[in-house]
Image (cartoon, rainbow, N blue to C red; front, side, top):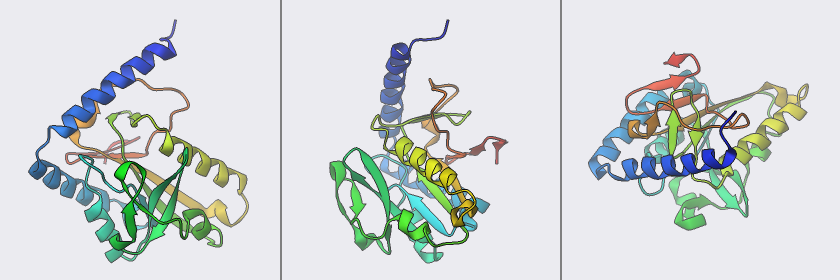
Length: 216
């Protein structure tokens, strides 16, 4: 008999708290060093080099620092998008510099509504996008425990539905790669998961790059 949803939820909450405590225990110097290594590991992958657009969270508190990634993507001529919470949903809007970010949901820096990713893709024949996800805990099978709000699961689920409905149109050539950024201390051998959970295609830490084919 399978484990109940209630027990899984309790386990997820415990692991989330443990992973965030581990992450918070890193020193400022460690977070900077590890974040720089993570950005280097990510930008060395073809999914970054070939991306026309980079959609990434804006780091907050002890998360992997994405500001170096944002600066690198601007310098590399990528179209850069950052998330904005809109009620119970989240969407990505284009930014052209860090100056386009202002304090928003729970104090996290966000863009103004402006030019959305959906609008940007609407008239493009072919384009590749890299979406970078945050999270509390992960395992090497690429399962993810988020912060409990479900914003990224809903956004990615909606994006998948949108692409699926437009097969045979210009969007049928849309290529999206998802990569979660995490410190090694956030990685577990196994965490609770559900069949409907969306796994990132890559997990990038300061020590390794994990994909469905193993370490990359």
